[in-house]
Amino acid sequence: MSFFEKLGFEIIKTWTTQDARKNREDEKWLNIIVKRLKNNKEDYNRV
Image (cartoon, rainbow, N blue to C red; front, side, top):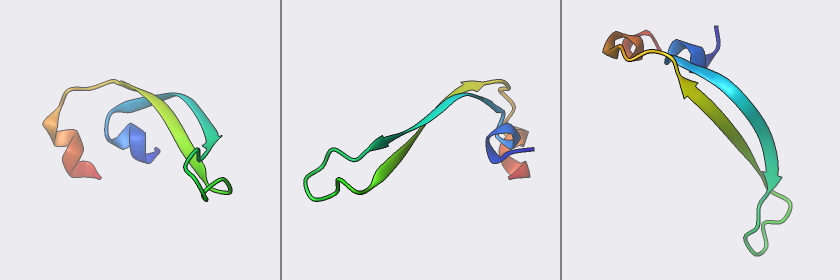
């Protein structure tokens, strides 16, 4: 079970993009779209 699944999320899409800030062109960002699966506060205590 992944970190996001433990929090009650399903990963829909992931991708990386290049940093657009000046002098950081060699850095990358990880982008993630997730879907909330549960609405249970106890899920937060399992991580």
